[in-house]
Length: 414
Image (cartoon, rainbow, N blue to C red; front, side, top):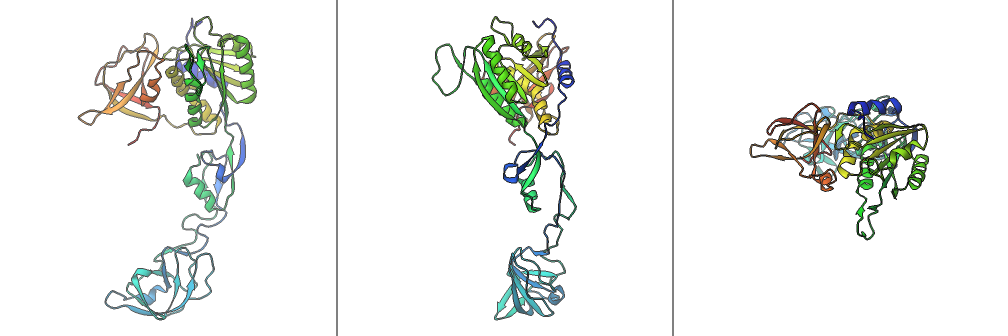
């Protein structure tokens, strides 16, 4: 076991060779169910937005030339001859010397080419005093000025947020074609692992991995299916994995991949189908025991039991796979430049990833400070780390004060 470790680059190449990551398919979904989904087609507007010239203020629709010369000390006097309400076509035409009362959002009456704000007027009977000189188009939003009929308003691959949903609703769509969400089965192994919520018995620890990994699946664009915790017995793990493969597009396990007598995952995976285990061990720290298998056309990622190791390997290898399956564009990882707050040493012969938290020094420089864990199993690392630093296999150390690149695990508050 682990006699020949794959490099991280080799592991990524193995994934691309055995699992051509592509979107799973498409489906129509109602607009209210579409937030955070990925568009599967370009969206073209079938109408102008707004569909008519509309007022952007409460006031009076006028002919701009009728207001020429108006000012605070010398108002122009015009006659009010009607009302334009939102949601209705105006029934009155604005002629020379007349105005129509109008509310925000109402269609502009025929004959009018500007709207004077209510604050710049004074009404005396049916006579309106206007204290501002206007030009054509003042306070009018023209038809199609926001979106033109035939315009591509959203591109395929766009992740739908509140703004995009608003655009889709504005052009009259009630449903939209999106990429299917990959279903990811998540399960944990180990006699010592217990499901959160119950009383913790002596010798047990709560199942950290399944919950943190399930959250990471959601962040990647997938839907986690939590299958529970299974003891270190080959028959039960095999049964659980068969169920996982039948119900999901991808499977993630944690624990059972090291060199102990109860680390049964590689053997069990090989018993489930061909080609079986395609990778067993990666030359990285933490995360060396990570194992991958291909059962038919479905990939199983078996991650280490240590929480920090499991989450790191997820970010390095599993996250991009789920994103591709979900039809999401693979953007560059979020990174920031910082300075090493202490000297850091890699593991000999392995690419090393050191979890760090970020802080500013007295000079307002961003410092990357190693999260003191001592062991890869320290659970607080998950919450305390802002990201990680990568040290190459052939590098002896990073010196204190050296500029480093920190890959962020999450967006930092400004």
